Amino acid sequence: MSEYEETSTRLVDYVVIIEFDETQIRHGSSVGNIVQRFPKYDWSDISLSPSLEVFSQPQGWALSAETRPVCFFTNTLTDIMGARQYACCLQVYEPCGDDIEEVDDTRSDEGPSLFKPKVIVILSRFPFFDLFRNCLNQILLALLEAEDKAELMISTLLSQVYLTPGMPAVSFCLGSDRLSVRAPKSPTIPVTSDKVTLFLQQLGTIHNILTLLCAVMTDYKILFRSSSLSLLADSCYALRSLLYPFDYPCSCSGSRCWCCLRAPFNYNTYYSSTISSATHFLIADGTISRSSYCRLCMESWATTISCL
Image (tube, rainbow, N blue to C red; front, side, top):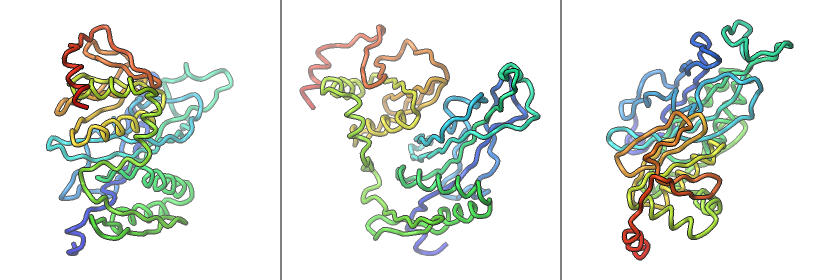
């Protein structure tokens, strides 16, 4: 490793391709299986996140009777030391083979094709979501043309792009595109792009914004619900950015796209559409509703609001 690489950080740590495991189908559902990972072995400074198959498909690995549009979303992964890594996922649906069994009830008399999910994941310590969306689209197009072309792109991301704070932007070629990226000036200040603006527009009123901020700052659990995985991830990232320098981890998964935001060092994930009795606030379609289980102290609220 060169001296430059020792003082810099890789733009991309891992690229992983996860497919639907057709050998473990039960009633149209299965698990994800890592079919390719780059590099094949863990880096010495950061390892591949465990259970990536779960986080890359929050709605579960299930067959679909119809194809679905390509979907990009992100997940924030945190290890036991608090180090953060971003999983940028591109979800596509591909036709299944003819040998799939135990799902005959999903077929009509005409026998329409079934489609299985496939996810391409970029793991990085940088929150450059728009850049990684572009990279994943290029990799997907290359996979459809020739696998060696896609591997060349992945090799470029893993081994040729290193970022150093305070240094000029780094340019690199990916397919027919020439991309440029610069390391954030601070490793802790969030890079928000337009996510905060869009999130505040979703909330609508200043009352909703203050209610949400006060609830998080006073250690209440917040539950987001959305039919869009990308909107869900962007909203959670925007809220965490607004709370800087406080750090609140979140998790999102479940059959109905739920996301849980909790106080530091508490990490919880929902795998069903049932709302826990511990949930204090539910945010759906930009509106905030207080759960019937929540009992707030008005004096605490008044004190918190006066400090904002």
